[in-house]
Length: 364
Image 1 (spheres, helix red, strand yellow):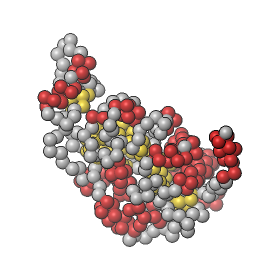
Image 2 (cartoon, rainbow, N blue to C red):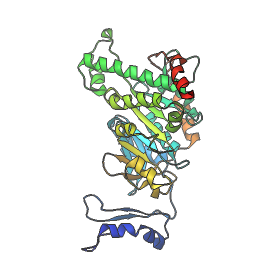
Image 3 (tube, helix red, strand yellow):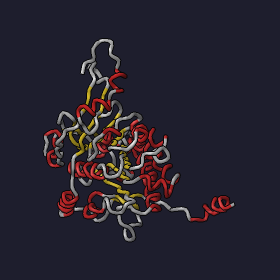
Image 4 (tube, rainbow, N blue to C red):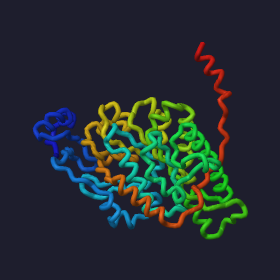
């Protein structure tokens, strides 16, 4: 719509519900003004929506020819174009939305696109799953793509479900990050990409401790549960990794279904500039995730707003079903793999002795 001269945008904004009523739509979203056009956009959902399959996106020329470091094929935009983003440039992603609106499917779509584009030598994934069932489909590819703290091979599943193990893994990643920075300093490289190119060109000797550095992507499903059970112990290493780790190739994706301020704190928001918001119930939640309303007017079922830097883009998330993920994992598992998951440095966990005084004070 191009408004007539003298018509104020706020007037049109206030008529949102009336426009939705007269169009008999599920819920409309007004974009006023559309950047760089001088017009106002009104998005109306289709009465008969179509599913965006993951297959159609992975088969696309755009995905197959992309030269991104860590390409994430997310889905299709309103104009039916394939939407892709580079996790290495973001550098960390925050995913939020109400229960059953497509967060886990979104995470699976991200993991699937990374598995399709990356060789096991170039990418390692740390999966944290407090729900215990979301990521269990990826068990077959443990030795190919997953990373694990040294010393836990016999006792633990590489997909971390226990809170104490999560804390240990995050601390271990902090140690790994510091080691990588030391190697980068020795090599005189500014980031992982430069370092790996020097290493491939035989300009860095393994005798001096140099080694090829794969990207490490940490994916946490249901972050709210971790904050409730461990609080500061989880938040501090996450903030530290989020602040420093982009240059050494460690990236984080955090998902939560409860976008309240005590879970998505200021520290976390400041370090996670890229946001993916599925449908939420209230405008307050939308403001917490995106710092603006809009996520409360989405349709649901994979409809999302993706914001990286500027204006949010509306994307219909690609749908990848569990049987499909199982087949992909099985296909990768049949190929040659490493003997064990990628080792992360072992970190001593403090005993419970240090907590006694706090507990005692609380009882007083």
